[in-house]
Image (cartoon, rainbow, N blue to C red; front, side, top):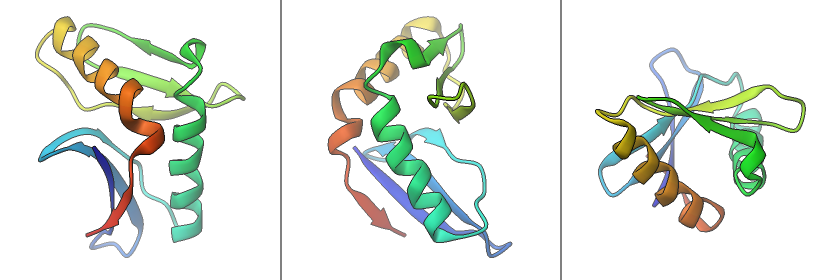
Length: 101
């Protein structure tokens, strides 16, 4: 599992959290690399607190300490797939390296 960082065609900055080639989470756009990288660190910190995340039938979210949603996962085909992806993230996100595309 790793964070893939990249610059979009609009010259803004993004990241994905991937497990091999499967994208689990796509970020929103950020105006600077520093802002993007700060969000990656926020995700790593906030994911460890189970009260910060929730899920429904097709995706999951993570909230920061202030209640702001900082992550929305990609869409999954079933609640079981959502739970499986959440478990993968729980187990690996803190250790996930960052790789520039």
